[in-house]
Amino acid sequence: MEDFREWRRGFVRRRRRVLTFHVKRLRGERAKEERNSHRPQP
Image 1: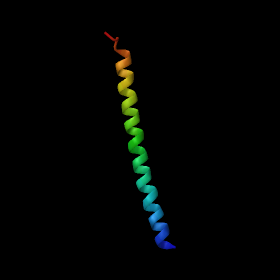
Image 2: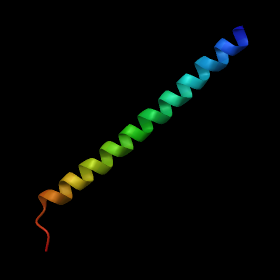
Image 3: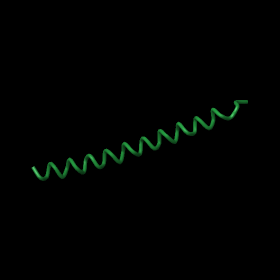
Image 4: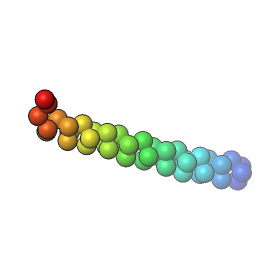
């Protein structure tokens, strides 16, 4: 039981890190699109 709890804690930690990484990347992409949209297209 303890092993399962430890594994689950590590799994959640890894998953949270991956989620935050994806969120940061999505925000970066969105910010890039916003900057491009502000610039008038040729």
